[in-house]
Length: 564
Image 1: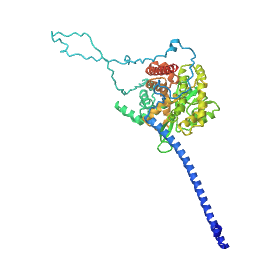
Image 2: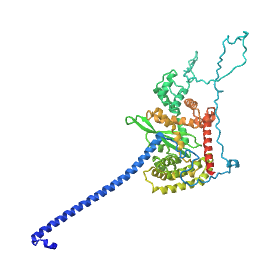
Image 3: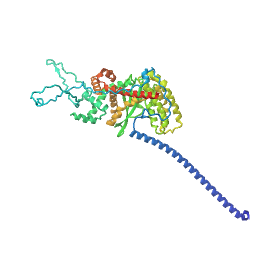
């Protein structure tokens, strides 16, 4: 029996069956559409989940890098050293370093063997300039009598031993007597000598005491409350508010000399600059806020370091300081400088810092060791070139850079272009590549002028005064105190740069400016050092020379091993 025999003959029944079939078909079609919609939704959720997973993986990698940097900052070495052992080979096959081409051939014996390591000569303390007090320890009369014959013993010699003793500083009151004279017959008035000048108008502090307070706070980093205790131990209680008034008066007296140094720095063809934050009390808002100290450093022809203070890190501060400046400005990649460069119509040229660029590639080593180490090796070669030309004239240094540094920079640029499309932008290597590419023109500019330096480390070193000091005095008392502190930091930075004994220098400058000295140029730290060579700290000069000699010998030995 075929299937057609089961079909009803009644048209009404056939219609009913057809309608049931259509309804079943519609239900199946709707069910299929629902299944398709659910499948599409699941696919969309799966794609979103995959995208979220990729994003979380990138964020996780970024956080791991940040955690590793934080752990190294807290517990690891701060020095950015790629190889602890100079004899250790490199992990990757990097391009060979270009053969150095010295301007003049070295003697045969020097070319054949590296310069020996300079022997460290012990520095012996000298006491000839100190007062010598003779203290004789003698025997008793009984001990000076012979026990055998009873005759007195003859003195046949003596032994001497030196003992270096410390006598605490003392405070003394100097009573200035100003006699008055008048004629006993006539009434032509009373005459008396003028009162000696003081750095604190109407105050009792002498220039030596004011210099001690200034040097202690701004060079030795002692807060005023500690000075309050120190002076109390010497027998006189002076409140910290009184000491603060003396600091204010000293800044007022020294401000013309700081302004002169500022004007001379702005005449330098190259200025190195950087900034550091400091907590400031008071202001428009309750509590504390963050201010900034800015360092501006002149070249060897203008050997001064001046500081400026602003209540924010906006570009208004450096823009006002550099308003009339024309020349090279070497700084970090702070965006506030961009408006200064653009607004100068080419009068101020940007010079970037290779130390900042190198640090970012050093931080990328754990996650991209091959690429980061390759670029770090090239940067090391750039620094080796600078080390060889450190003492050379600017013209010869420029020729060496053009001959050897420019090809290395070309290789770094090609490598950066290669890595740009391959690395994740938010990874540490991606951030290092982006930083270098954004600063590339400024990073190469130092090869176009022999007076420029490869990095901005000199300005970072100049801000150690504030970086160390704020760990002790912790904050600046008010917005008005910031510019006064900048004046005093400027004076003491000049003394440090020229290795002057700071207390003697500040005392002399305070005394002469209080007396109305108009020859400010004679008070500049370099001029003062030339006229007072006995107050130049020779041990610091010797120490820096020995350290430079050791570093130079180490680099020469490393270069000699590479040639071998």
